[in-house]
Length: 381
Image 1: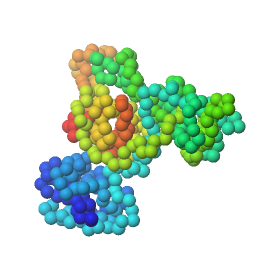
Image 2: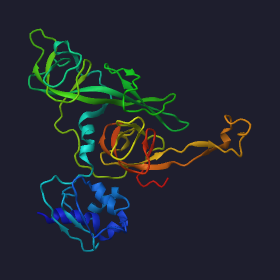
Image 3: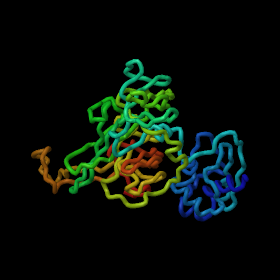
Image 4: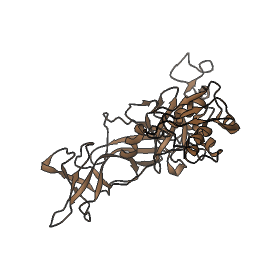
């Protein structure tokens, strides 16, 4: 059983002519490489390939590959001869290497989702003993679950962001993010870490509401004997619950655990795909940061889609052909010069909704910013 796993993975990354043509092997590769705990398939491919996101193409060219994700810390990859590759098995105490560092994205896989509406969801109307906040081992009273039965489990979620798009025919689309208060209504809250892009005029479209999981709980008592609320016992040591939080049923496994990088399935119109927000940052992020994107399933984006992120080029006046010397603040449109977009890094989508998706920044040469344009991973400009 060892042969189709480790030899296949090694061959997938490091053998045959297809490798050299499609993946562009680096010329400075060592003779061997020992897989380490904390490695990802992207990291390993990045050591030997010019374009690490292309490694699924190599697997597809090798029919012996049964499961490209079953490579373990301690496995020795031999790189000495591209036409004669071997792999020595390592210890099997650790988990296999994944495509992306799951520890970096798991909180976003479990705790965040984007929905078109939330007002219809059941909500917390009161807390045990009149508390303002409550947590594990305490009780919340919920309105809107008349059919709930003891033993049913629910996630307690909170609307935190409202994402919108402004459709402009003259130029590119512009996107905006609003923070929400405890009722889910828009508010200005500068303490929120998710940041918004600049917005303008008309053509408004709702992209979705972001819901953040606060806790989970089990129904202990339904609406019986004249009681008009359902009793929910909180059983997670996560965030505190407050009045106004919403409830959704607990899902067994709502997200993928393995990801196969690939280019976007279609060419997106310039200005329609942008970075909406950066997690836990004011306006910028870097490697291993999570970003929210303005495209989703309706745009052909699915888990594993890889984008390159680009700083949009400025428009500057040509000072030699304008009246700059007479009035620095006034110049004609004819004297404007569009500067090129500048590459910032690559990101891979790990969770997709209809109009919004979340991606992990995989590599970069400059900060990833709100408003960055998303392009094909190999876009030259």
